[in-house]
Length: 249
Ligand SMILES: O=C(CO)COP(=O)(O)O
Image (cartoon, rainbow, N blue to C red; front, side, top):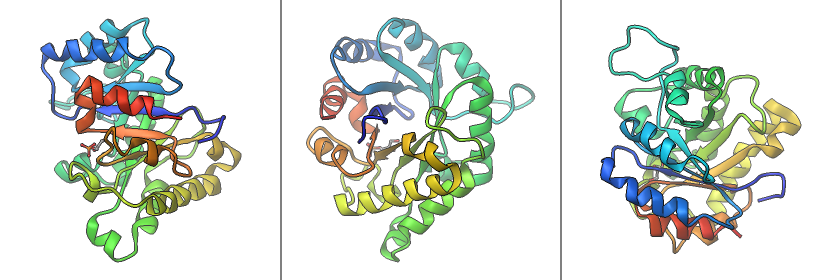
């Protein structure tokens, strides 16, 4: 981490959380004072409005987990970036591997969604990551480089883009890459961002995600080019999420 990249610890609640989870959110918001990291919780759509109202005035940000590329229209069941913004979200996770797999989202649609996020004034957190087969074939850096090239539109800057490296085989499995492997892939992401966006790339935050827990967070967060974490399961418990946020040096 460098002084020019403020660490971001983001929690992805995925399809978890009913209204009663507000008490967990309040515990998180109340525990953030004095932390150096930026913090964000991305609950399911149904909770965004209530959560955003609840954390107003605290340093906890609220984000979405996906959006449709269009502003409005005949897209039953979808949510636009403008709707997220209107509900109080300031950011949106895009291209998560669960969206890429469950909903057959490719890089082109992710790219269109990033443009939608920018149109609505949301900060996109663009997820990339290799499968275990690709990792074992030695292709992790190449796969992730291709995903960044094809999922991120022209015009990315230090303040309008966050990238999250989430190896698919590390999500929800309790397995993590070695810090050398994380450093290699994060270095490759920084490199392709630099090729495309020049000096702006030095300010773009690259998060690591995949089985981040209180006991491995400090090591992962101290790795070269790791500017924060995208936390799944451990973000559902306020105490664990806060412990991870506190692990930022
Ligand atoms: O997918 C993730 C965050 O987006 C990671 O999930 P876990 O932290 O549960 O492995």
